[in-house]
Length: 640
Image (cartoon, rainbow, N blue to C red; front, top):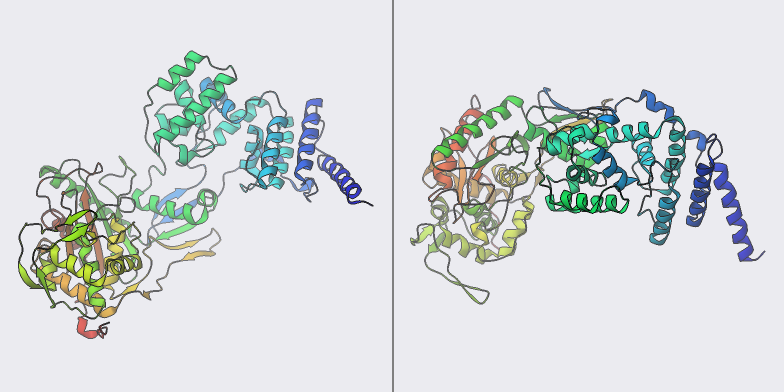
């Protein structure tokens, strides 16, 4: 038998197998049979009909009449207090089809399935086009799914893109269309589909995106919502109005092509002003900055489906009462600073136990209800002089320098591209010879730049990476002055590693995760690794104590040993205080979301150190006083 004859025989067998697959679907119309035939032929072209899929093992679509929501994920504080519950139907209100805007129904059909009322579950034209694209690409690149196929996929099948799943979708879609009317399917789809930001169903989505009911959506709003379905978070107007408008235009264009709207309606909709509502994800949960941070971590590690339907039990590292105390402190000082002329200021605070790197408090702004943007984990702002300890640590780690080594605070210049860079101190003057201890305590700029050049800026960057600071950095002369972007979480974690004498664990807000049966999925019991030199770490802590005792950080002094550093950018856009006691490390940042100047003369020492002190007095109540270890308790590295 020739190879060509053999191939023809195989192809005939595949066709036969393909028709066998569809046996038992039930009585079908001529149009459905034609659809099946064309789908089968397309699959043959893809060479996949022979896959062993048992028709009898597919789900029974009649289950839709008794559908129950998936298991809920619960998030607790460290003491077991329930903070919030998250599941796929946590934010859904089911409404009948006649209470959904006709504009939205047409927009969704135009975007997802323009021939919905003409086919019987599968669209041969769409499937054929998808098969061609997928065959040429060597994998599944285009779906060709009808709304009915999407519905059965979302309810019954894996989200993984595969030819086997597409075939199952087709069979289930045909079955579903035999037991439900078209309008019933469309109603179920619109109430089931995910619209982003934990919104399921058109009603909750309409209230979240546009602050109105689904029946009141106009054409412009409807087209924008329809454009979300393929990638809700990516095309969300809350994330990018530009991308949302782009998708809106695509949907309107498709509606115009189908003759469902006129050119005038198309033009008017594009010009229509969009008035957004607000994100309502996890609304009503206790401690939203914590629960949203946890939810983001779960989504990143396990995926959105597992977060919403996985039935996980999550124990955080945060005590609810401690977190509330931190949030109240931020609100109080926001009011105080506003009274001092710092209008529209925001405050972020992160507290970490340096012995475990457990996050004990995380406050991402003044009011989570008015803004879910988490400045503690998402805002990358310049640390100013709070960056200097990383440079001094790098010097100490070489073994050539110690806290009392002499540096010269005098005018200096460096080549900078085609010109020269003349670094200056904050007060504009120079103080001559001084110790490193004094230079850091007084926050002098010239000495730290000289030391950065001496040890190498690339070495400073390497240490920052070890400490978990991942923002882009260039080995430029101004690096020691903090001309990079960092988050308060990164700063608190880095200083916590110093406070633990070089021992480090990944900072985390999650202590433990189990499934609903108690099986452990994640256990973040600390497993510290020695990341930095212990002597150099103890030395930088020792020097930072002088910054609080007699330097720019005096406003943070407590009735116990404190090590810390102020941070003020030259334009007064960002002001910081990052400090630690042996049992707790805290970073506090103050700035504006629009990155404008806070006020002339705003400094970390004058305005942020008192916030830090107020928080720590409350946080350390009943915590015994503990001294830092002396550098003399560790072997000093040999000079290299």
